[in-house]
Length: 190
Image (cartoon, rainbow, N blue to C red; front, side, top):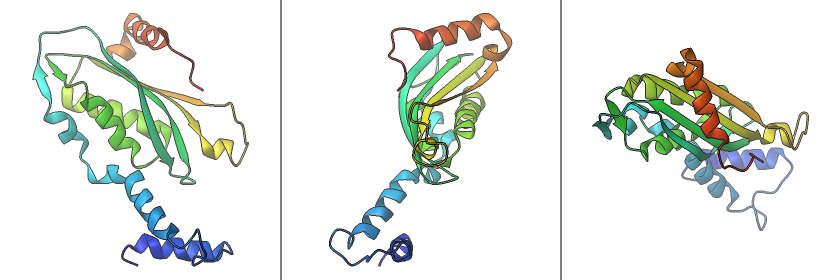
């Protein structure tokens, strides 16, 4: 076995009472190792460099919003998936970032073992640090398989978290505008 994760998966299968050499499981350690490396590749990326190479000076001072960014992550408590949509808005103060960089930032942070609350604040903090906007808002909606498959086993529950900074936090009109944009022309999260 070339990857240490493969040996751990083999040991796990044995501990669960399975035969890792049986048909259907013989390549499972390799597949699980590759999947876990992909699911956690965000540790190998730098959030600042994702945004820094796409900053542009622009005379624009209205809200920029990228919404309905799909994401998948692993809960750090059970290593079970949680997934959903992330909405990111900011009000520039002389600088904007290439729009594709915001989903890349979401992808990077979601490709780490996470809790939804930290994921929400990490995105907001990074945008605040790099762009220095007048305000930033992040809203995350997600379903957690750890709540659906184990524990309370509630299939229709989902969690919403937010991180509001600057004008999004201090100005109720800005906050209402941001939240209003999130309700426009969209299907409910299911």
